[in-house]
Image (tube, rainbow, N blue to C red):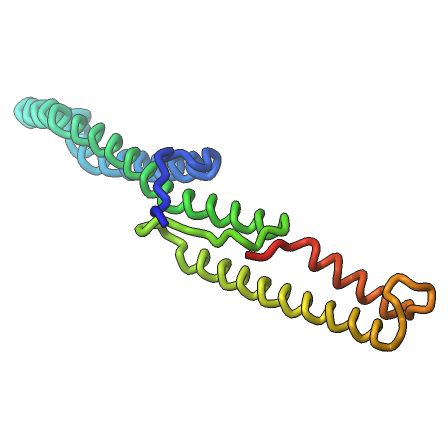
Length: 187
């Protein structure tokens, strides 16, 4: 089977936007803290009213720092923005595929296992979901076999399944089993 390759990096916009905004807010808080630690000593030197030579040196350093630090800060913000899209995609993609797989199981389709890409996260969750799907397949097969045995045993006793002489309890069990059997499709 061809490996699943997703070309859209915004799989779940709400989820991914939430984590991108969170990442950018943390980056902004870090940037403000860093800039305060770097610039405040020189700003205090300028504001202190000390010797002119000291203020001139502080002003020169501030101008120099502004020229060197801000391009790096902007580049880091852009880089981390792109990385946060990529990283959120590594989680949002598998979450989307697992949700989609669970929905197909809930709709009664047991024929489609969940496939994730080689480097995706949450492979253990997808594997557990596939194990659950396999257990449901086994349960479905056992239930179908028990249903056939129940119908055969009623017929063997001389009772037709649809006849008025059939036991109400046996008919109710057959009906419940048939509902479950009909709900799920097998491979």
